[in-house]
Amino acid sequence: MNSVRRKILLVSAVVVCAGCSQTAALAPVGGAELGNLRYAVNDVLLEQGIEILVAPVCSGTGADIECAGKTTGNETITGSATSDDASTVEIKVGTNVLYSGSVQDVLDRNSTVGAP
Image (cartoon, rainbow, N blue to C red; front, top):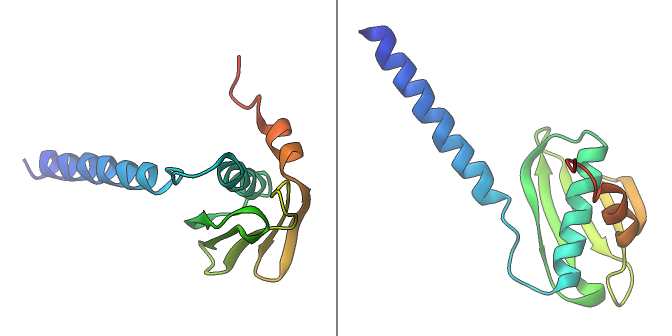
């Protein structure tokens, strides 16, 4: 009977954790530039194999869009728009620049992931 309880507890924990991670990854309501920048930041982090503890949350408009999160190693993740129309971004983990360039280029190269 003890084994059954452990299995139920384990399954419950997995379900709860899955719900938390999905909720944390929801994009905030905002304009296309805000969403595009956030998706580009997340895509670059995944491309680079960065382990994310707190998914980057973005806010602002135009050149004032800033994204912030944390790695599992407790390093700060930052993404900053580098143009007035938020079409370019600089993404850092700590002081290490992972990417600096076009948001659309990142979105384009990742747009077919998982497609048949």
